[in-house]
Length: 393
Image (cartoon, rainbow, N blue to C red):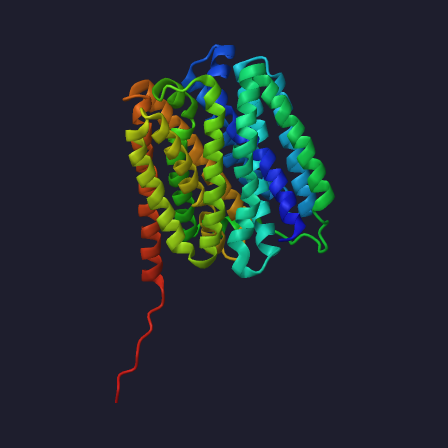
């Protein structure tokens, strides 16, 4: 794999840490700032909605910039945003800083996905995307458990100071390893790009992404309260269990990329079905500490096995026009799913059956995503030109 891909992995690592680390610190943030757990969960929803809104805006604004310049500008926004989180004196300012940070997210992964697919042979596109997203999974394996431990022992602000340092390091690595564009940026007509996004297969692909990841974040947003209040784990054991979740992400992402290279559609359908089954069964494991740890790993593996095939699906349905914008919108769709999942989980906790119901309620979303994907395939088959065989004379 080209070395530029590993630079993208470094940037993805930094962004992944800031996206996920807050989940292990919801109790600390809510206690320090005097807000409820569900209100602290809005720090995740606000970030996710910022990604959804910021991805198309930033992609259009930077469409004619050299790709390396785009990546460096996004990492600068990311670093400043995390610095603002570390310094935020109130809940409102912390939420605003999280939204600012999120504006770097969607376009980085969107542009990065397109760059990744152009650096390798066509039969390696799934693996290239998976390699870039490995930075996201490694952030969960290494960065999130360490950030959770750091926040629990030295205060949640210490975690954001550490993430700011990660942003500076990622900026330097991208500056050193990503080559400058050899060709001038292509002219981009954002209106034509938006028309490409309006195609039914693209919209259904985006909806599949929203529903698939919405299910994951219905549960994972509140994983720390689940582990501590239902499964009976101590505060000190949350970080190691998040490490197990991250290990599942890495395995699922890499295996999903390899499978998507060979069988893209079956991999997409199979991973959504597997995620649904895991979440349904996880409900019965919450009171058993060994079983719940196993299901935390399976949750990460099945969720991130969907990522390469979902990203490839949207890129292919968008066609040549607007691939960067389509990829950015799909990252926004991942995060819209994150936001909806966090909101749904908060509603279940505050107004519904409570924490123990989160897995089976969340399972309804990847189940719906599977239905949308099957419907999209059905429409494609109906729209495909039919071959009429001549009658034998």
